[in-house]
Length: 196
Image (cartoon, rainbow, N blue to C red; front, side, top):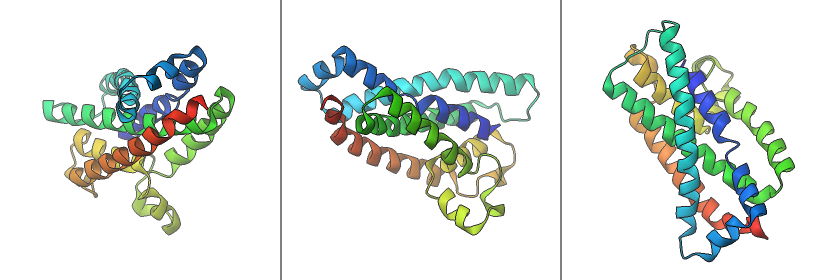
């Protein structure tokens, strides 16, 4: 269930960047870029919007898990952790999506690149099975994939077995936070390219 939740967040977030292409075509991005607002704030605003949209999907997945009788931790702390990791993951992948949109600049190319990236990101993570049983070369890739850290944290918050988070929640949050900062920095620099 944590893997499905992370998958739904990934899939809804990775296509968030198409909105900036539509906004460019409507002339809205030109107005944003003419304002004194820092580029990083524009990027974070788009990412947070993607995070809020992902919460709806997360609520549906959690509701289905409850209806199907999944044995999850339903404490306030667990749900707060799930909320944090869902928003952080959506923010991260939405920002990644914006970088792609700023580089490819057309809806058709963006949809093609988005489709190409979602499956490798999903399968090169611990969403379906633990990294410990993967081939060594895939284990290396898994540790460079931020989705792995989101799933690890979601397992720690949702599942009753404390051994489900081999990486540790602090490591999960640190890696996801550092990746987000790096992506926001890159996206803030590439954001003006969307209008060129």
